[in-house]
Length: 201
Image 1 (cartoon, helix red, strand yellow):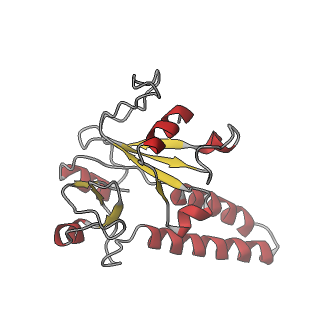
Image 2 (cartoon, rainbow, N blue to C red):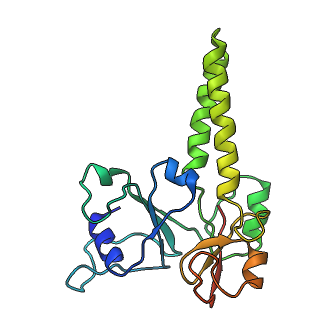
């Protein structure tokens, strides 16, 4: 991720504060939906020398709170994740293969909590082979808490049952496919819904 992109997108009001506690706990403070094939302009209006590779769109995440006055050290974790088209996507299991077969336009990779959970599971397995029960119990509690956070972070804010899988025209990812067809305004910013784009975590 390039700092110049952050400055331009912030000037256009594109970054939104992340309100999901699980992502805040991992250090993520702001996110932005990158439009398919987006070209980010520099301060003088010409395209930036470097551009994100997002032919099917993507998500940018910032890991610092004071966006415009951050230091290079604070920006080191800033990154973006590109979406893949159904034709390019290589499914990891039968469930993902079924999703890809439906022909949806975009499939987004999972973020943060999944890799964090995998790392803790590895630590848990290592601790399980140790004689000390205290470390094992502490890691078990951490893993249980992360699993709960992961479940809550991915649920639709309307029904709290299905996973969020729809990007609205305002850039928010808050609703499942079913609720997105029944709601007329974004539950987070109240913007009228004019476009719905399917995505998968």
